[in-house]
Image (cartoon, rainbow, N blue to C red):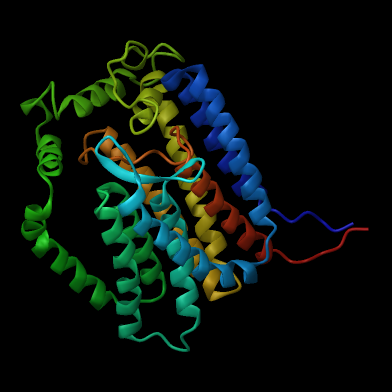
Length: 355
């Protein structure tokens, strides 16, 4: 009988983080959302395990097709998307789906496939890749969704970075980006500018734009070393903390489990990222190496931005905590991305037969 080849450490880390998320969600969102998350998570885990069994050549050949389909879905959102909270981000196909969340995973796959077609990487190849990144970014910005567009940029830029772009070009882009900040400020919508100013001083509008940040900081700080105890967090249980089941679920977790619990959560994230990068470094193909590196970068960046936002170090943006926050498309897309990484890990392992 053939041995079941699976990266068990990575699988356990994924399931462990999702389990901690369900624990926090029961406190933050109540029993109904808890069971909905369990159902969605079960579907996502099943899809992840099925994807883990698929050979890399199927991912490679299907990457561009899937990328084009989701890109067309982003175009469709602009004309036929469902508008919720002044943002048009969803399509209704018998169920609600957010194409931008899928793009975060598919873009590294599409870019990785493009790089495998090149016998040698030239400077203009990187510019072509960045142009490929710009198209979905512009479509998502039109929704508007600044947070997800930033994640798509990270997915693309990280993949280009791991493809071997020169540090000279990276330094040039960094300097140019900083120089353009005053110009970009004028392109931000008034509410986006207010979020940046609120980050610098949330108490200038404590009952308006600064309310989210202030309540979140109170929740994180009041947790202390050991936390107030499960289901005992006052900010969440008394309803002071807004969006506590999505963007600010880390504040709920930190208040109830304190610094120690938060350190354990972040340690699991770091270990998971290390394992994914280890899998990328031992990938047998350039396609797998680039795609895993890009997907891992998106996961890590999303986690760190959310925690920084909740702590008041970054402006408030609509960015859920992967595997932890309540979600639909975002949760399924995250599991799908890890399914691909598990597939790469499976191909990395030597093939042996057990009698």
